[in-house]
Length: 301
Ligand SMILES: [Mg+2]
Image (cartoon, rainbow, N blue to C red):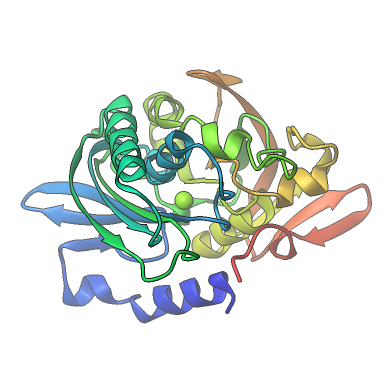
């Protein structure tokens, strides 16, 4: 199974959800769902971390809890929202003892509160085998940006420039399993500052979890536009642009905008990496080569 195929099948099956359920403003396929409750629009997202998939066995429990919360918070940031509260579930292997379960739940509570997103409920279950992987699932509810509402993936327009915050690649140290993928700061402040500063000129935004190539392709598809990225403009922590665009787990913001964009927002540099035009697909230009960005990046299989 390819994760991207399954996700697009789910998104297309739910394409007319809003026609049947008018309170669903944005269904599957964006960073968060947008749901109207009364007269208020809410953001909803859920994500999971699984041992030996999203973190190595032996990773400190505090960092596992941090990542579980931060991944969902990052999806709220992707829409320029503000987290409100979280629900968490944990599934533990048969030999995971009470003291470790206590330590993990205390860490989930602490990290939720760190991002002003208290845990308000959840569930725990014991898995049948000692070899079963530790799994945490975190749902976060958020509010939308007061002036702009949610910033979707689908709003990129021909003539926009394409930007990223921070630097890409090098998030995962294969020797230790540690790195930025465990300690990243969700770009809440940056996303809000961009929505404040750019107003209606901020057209599309998402967070980078599966690598710039794959994620930018998803944004181009959602926007029904053509994206062209310049390899030598991609700001990177990795030794070359190819790794920077494909390793994933950056949790930086990818956005498109028209007009003036500041060189830095909140705590992050902002780098222009490409342009949007009419057409389809996302390509990375390296001197005279044009590489289909869809083939880069992390697809969970
Ligand atoms: Mg996301």
